[in-house]
Amino acid sequence: MKDLKKILDNRGGIKKVGVIGMGYVGIPSAVLFAEHFDLVLGFQRDSPSSGYKIEMLNSGESPLKGEEPGLEELIKKVRKSERFEATSDFSRITEVDAVTLAIQTPFKDNASLEPDFSALEEGLRQVGRYLKKGMLVVLESTITPGTTTGLATDILNKESGLVAGEDFALAHAPERVMVGRLIRNIQEHDRIVGGINDASTLRAIELYEPILTKGKIIAMDSTAAEATKTAENTFRDLQIAAINELALYCEAMRINVYDVRDGIDSLKGEGITRAVLYPGAGVGGHCLTKDTYHLERGARMAGPLDFPSNVESLYVVARKINDFMPQHMYNLTVEALSRSGKKLKDSKVAILGWAFINNSDDTRNTPSEPYYLKIMEQGAAVSIHDPYVSESSAIKLTQDIEEAVKDATAVVIFTGHKQYFELNAGKIRKLTGLPHPVIIDGRNVIDPDAFIKEGFIYRGIGRGDKNNHEISSS
Image 1 (cartoon, rainbow, N blue to C red):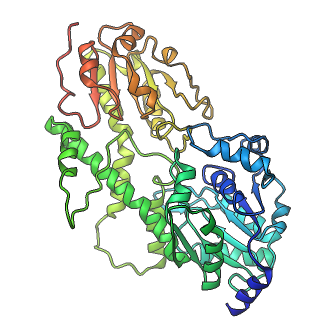
Image 2: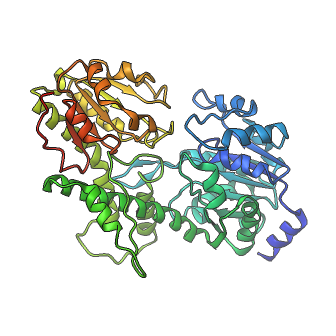
Image 3: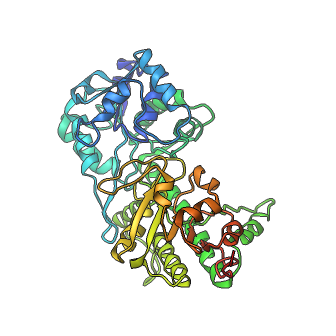
């Protein structure tokens, strides 16, 4: 480590930074770095699916089409100052003092807990090919605990002929962002920084400190940093599962989960911690849907694990509850259609919301998809509306809500986009052309009474007080 510190001191301060992966994490990170360092290179493969980002970024335009306050303005600013450039030329890694990797790490199969690290491995190989003494490499991707000192170290050492922790610094500094507030999250959230040794940690702190406003650095070793990231998402998933299960209970008891939630949340005082979230149609996104499995895998690989025999992991059970919610939306749809004397095979279903989170274009692991596949399997005609998403693989979408809802037997709200809070019951009913269309609210965005009064057959997550209403004759 003394040799590494000497190498880093001789190299001098960080002046140029590389960011690999121009996505929801890499883009805002890169342009924030560009405000504080001489030059930032944003590395992106020039592939048919994502190569378009290079030209957009270099034209000062954001490829992310959801609402991201401050992002596009910052891209324009750092492009104008020539402190940021997007490129597909990975050989330019040789120009930088520090390089971060923000590459997705999905799971191949949640049952076997086998992650798909192929994209991350390729990114690490690219870095290794052009790695020089005294550089800093930081993994921002969410990874199985033990990956930085294991797989990442092995690939970088092999490709570069150098030794991590001796010739170059290596750390894990997980992203902690949410779509819709990327810039603010990076600046204001505390930053976890974990190096494989002290010199690596200190060098990584040097990289991240300048971009923090309210946030502070929390230093630890790399495996603890990996566990922190996977555990914080696992706990959030657990909290969502808790309120989703309560919502299902409240439906059975014919009471309103939001009344119960408000009651729970009202108890405040010293030593009382309540983090009561909101129920919904399902959990999506890249992180919460798989980070539980990264944490589970890390613990079991490290072993031996002292755990009750024949007891399933609490965290995995939570995952299964959240994965069930699109199926529950399906069940609510079938029940409501039955009240109107219809079946899915005779119905048109309008799905409102394809992004997994409100006011965003992020469709990764959207809970709308398993619902869509299920109702298609049952023979329903389907239209999909999303104000921020114009295309998603081979699935057809529209950004015209009237087109989506016209002649629909059932309108099903999956995403809490701000536009859906303004849905007018009378207008929607006229578009359906039915006296008693179905509406399923998976995000509590509409007033049930207004739609029930207009003749709709209503179902809502956790709305046991309304789900068995009398059908209005108006």
